[in-house]
Length: 248
Length: 114
Ligand SMILES: Nc1nc2c(ncn2[C@@H]2O[C@H](COP(=O)(O)OP(=O)(O)OP(=O)(O)O)[C@@H](O)[C@H]2O)c(=O)[nH]1
Ligand SMILES: [Mg+2]
Ligand SMILES: [Zn+2]
Image (cartoon, chains in turn green, blue):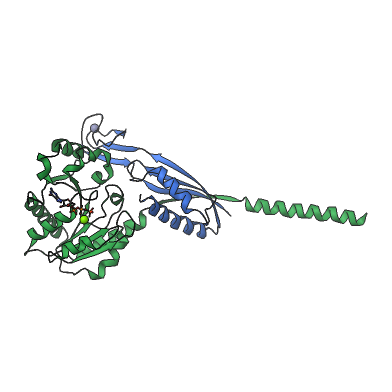
């Protein structure tokens, strides 16, 4: 009898403990965080911008879909910048050193970031290259990974952001990929030599891009025929002058 | 598809905040995702479910609040929601606008087990 009572008592105790445990497990707390998921990238980017600005280096980020002509345009820009201005290029690609090699062949310092799968560059990747960047540069170009979507979310510490749209891609792209256009300062319509063979309404492309972002400065270039490159380079040189005056 | 790297930063913040509060289990997470944030909510959910395995959020639920694109016109002063990405005031046609909401990519809150 006593034995049985003890068992019942033990069981009650166990159940009580279990319930305590249960209550303890279910104790919840809601916390308000309100943190930007890109906050750490933004912080690194602003440090990069500050350091490059102190050195008088104007940094330009090129974004476009694969093959819109970023590397070819940089090759032409290199020819137009010489010999007065010093430039260097950071190349972002998923695989291969190819683009950096093309730039080096022009006598321009270039570093390749191989992302190994990542579809965009992040500020910390640029930060890692920092010790290599010579302080006497005038311009640092960053060629982002070919992708019209993802790179747009990442500030790399640049002063000017350019989106390239090539004629064969079609004039309807600004509305379809708005983020790249809303966050850019310049729109460069590339491969203008193909206007005679591909239907591309450059008025429409410009109009729709400016509806999304009225602050865009628009350029039309052909790297193949060396058209519009001089104007673009002049814009970069003027921007750098303004930037130097502002930060003097 | 940069949603996976966004989710990686999300988990860094989640784990740090949970640790601060002494919690080892995250029950739920709520994000604010603006229409102009550049991420696709569906991909975020997929990436979250892949990433959470074996973490302190392994059973956590994810809620996403879609934040519309809201602008304030600097010419007429009106505030309005834009349904597409045409940055023109629907009242007066001005292009001098300020974005009020729509660029958010925020971890708003989470529920922890203590
Ligand atoms: N017709 C014509 N073709 C061009 C022009 N610029 C570049 N191309 C061609 O377009 C192709 C791609 O050019 P790239 O400069 O490699 O393009 P990219 O944007 O650097 O490509 P990724 O780095 O792979 O994203 C090459 O075959 C170029 O020869 C141009 O102005 N006109
Ligand atoms: Mg390239
Ligand atoms: Zn208005």
